[in-house]
Amino acid sequence: MGKQGPNFRHFRERITRERKRRGWSQAEVARRLTAMGIDSIYNTTVAKLESGEREIKLDEAVALARLYEAPLDALVGLQSKTERDLDYLMDALYDAVSLCRTDVDRHARALGDRMADIPPEYQQRDALDGLVGDVRGHLASAGNGLDELVEHFLEYAEQSVKQQVAAERQKKNRDKA
Image (cartoon, rainbow, N blue to C red; front, side, top):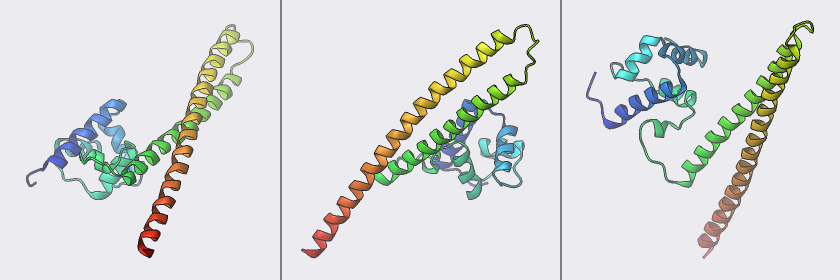
């Protein structure tokens, strides 16, 4: 393999850091990438990508960016400063919030469903039901916080569209003059 530039080194360090931050093994990353449709990814492949022993393919890099919910340019260490980049980052954050919101609802339902399976004769059912209720209440609070984030994104998107329309009008006026 040829000499690795700073972008590749940054990429390797960042994907390793992202994996460890989530507490995932290299095998777990390989499993998730395979589930995303990336073929021939094994834990040894992930290890070689992280160590720099193997070049990464574009579809693998894109899949890792999606998996870690990070823009590809951030994974390779590029700084993004334009409005378009901010829009991309806001979209990525919105996607993460949406996934979290869906997961919160799903987990709250699952807890309720599983609690309903506990037989009434279980001696500590009432205490367990109270604990499950508390956790479901916390999940509902988290869901409310996520809903507030969604409202922020909607406001941002509306403002962004207004700015784009104003910029287009200015350009048309300049073109006419």
